[in-house]
Length: 240
Image (cartoon, rainbow, N blue to C red; front, side):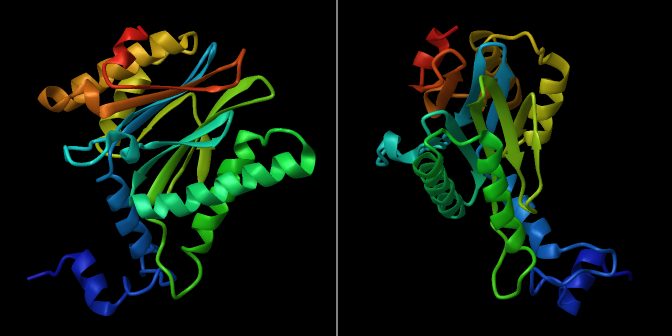
């Protein structure tokens, strides 16, 4: 009986360190981390004509937890936000690093940091932990949105340290289904209100009976103000 390839790799020790390639050219610990990200709660980000937003599922089902302490969207600077999927403790380390970078940039250059510089710093840190021994990869994907030079931008950094700029994207649980629907329905001329309405519709289609508006949070940044606005729960639907 033939043994599955992944079991063979485990038996031969290819998954014992993040720096060891399989004969097929894979880094197994990185691939395991990518699977962890897909178990995390989902977020949808979208670039709109008047700004950019991220809508995130907090997926907090414990009534004993204070809701405000389980936020999925974090403020990097007054004009940059980030949502995470995967291991939250890993994300906290990267978020703290990005916040310090943004503060240092303001002090050094007396100007707000560009969104791409933030995601590049995060991506570099992730890449290092997939290259050196004695540490495991960060099991988290970050979606970073902001306004730079009057232009709304949305980036996503994956486990490997790669990042790309997007018009719209999704991370976390059922990300492939969310992305498929975004490809079909997203239009570049959407406003933030229209984009949020579309994102909610997509979440309702994908989550079905499990959809609960009270478990969602929204953060958006308008071009004219470049300040973060936050809305939770049923108030999100009122934005429509």
